[in-house]
Image (cartoon, rainbow, N blue to C red; front, top):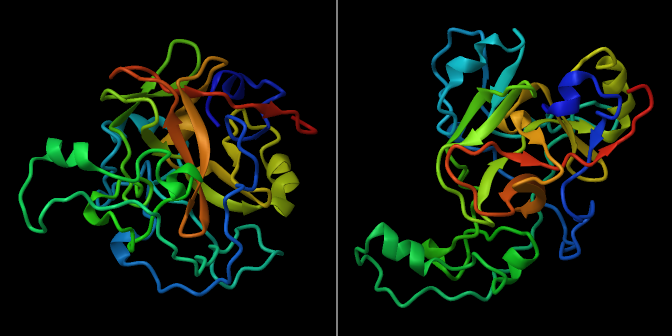
Length: 289
């Protein structure tokens, strides 16, 4: 991960655990059978762009200055989704096959506001009427997003990761910490800022990753679950540029989305436009780093 010590070769720059006190397993997760899911539509499949490529078919809707990244590693690829391995992958493969969504589809108990279907209201009015966006929603309280059967309908505000409701962001050159990431709009405490994405790596290959990156000055490895790590070194999203701080303005939370864990960067305070983003890396010493 990008940051003060990770860029300066600090030996502590190793496995990064999630910010806050979240544990590898959420207490509210349901134990349910798993079912196969149909392939994602093309527009929802992970997209990657090689930074030095002339391919202009991919444009990040969240990053204002993609051109700035062209001095990055020649083989670095930017993506806005977790890159999973093929469905045929097993525990002996480095990339983890995408977990199958759980079968449970129990909705929350939130209620759609009393607005006639088809009635036109302003975006501000709709924002004020949104449901499922606080602890009164049982799924939100359990760090789990609602599904398509949410009783709140189009007024459900608990599908932020599914809808990629990221903030407008900008990668920039800091004075002493290499590259950093700042937000270009005001952010409220509790808002989703961005998702931390990269390659989903089997924990059994973690030592191999560290051997591979032994002489690297930058590490971008984050624990997603007890068995899966996100490696954004060669393929990753813009969250890889968020620097460490002991007094951060963001936390990283594990959210369950259709039974699959995701790493959400969430504001822990109000953040003004133009402010650099940060979270606590909570480094753990790793042998050889």
